Length: 168
Image (tube, rainbow, N blue to C red):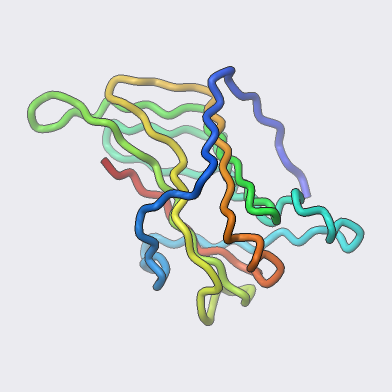
């Protein structure tokens, strides 16, 4: 597996707990889903909990005047740790009163035991990736977090369905 190195700013943001926003236990709607196969560790690395279980690369999500540029990636580790990196996120979206608001980028994920993501959801979670105020333009963004429930299901996960969403 190849992991690309990412530079990060001195203003790395760390998130210790998973977002408390309600999780859609039914999973994301099919029109907003992308699927990736999990990246299983080599047999000699099974005991390494910090080994990446999957890597979502070159994530894209554009909304009028909310810019998000590649390279961008989300990496999930067996121990529940996760990292999000984006080259650039900018918020120039005005409201109807010509003022802007803060937007939050979320990754909505459901984890499955079958390689094609068919069958029941083993686990689902929302990850709060980044918050950006009006007229901000940020570069080299790195956010880390930890999902304390993920390790209980990690060994069974074969596939992830996910989508990204901007929420204010």
